Length: 186
Image (cartoon, rainbow, N blue to C red; front, side, top):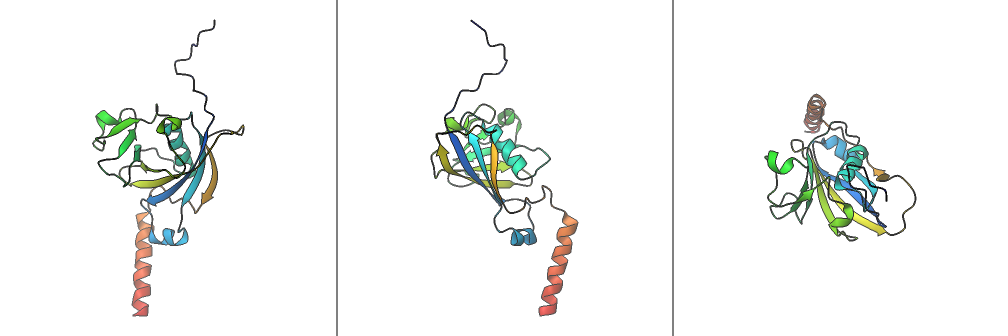
């Protein structure tokens, strides 16, 4: 009998694939950018045996981010409600001043299948606790047949990705232009 010498647990086989629509609902975005991109969303397919950490990586790349920050997933009716169940980084619960009182698990050990998601369920993804990139995630479908592809997989992009960091000089220029337009009209 062969022994498994891997230090990590082998991934449990899943027969489910989840299609999630990730919608940006908050963050450092200019009015001009929002006007040009009224919806900013990404559709991602992920296997049930993958972790919330894998979903974070997919969202991070789907929105063209480059600088890692702390993040968490929240399950509840309203964003940042004290009643929400949060899934956090492994070191998060002891070291973060942002740590939730309702920590349900860690992103590196929580599989998508373990969340008991159903079509129509929604939850939040909060990235960068300073710039507050807040995303609403809808479960669009759960399928039993899994095409042989690499997952997670970004299947649709709507709207441009906002820059991860707002260029305040550009924002000030846009603000000055808006004031000039109002002065000319008045």
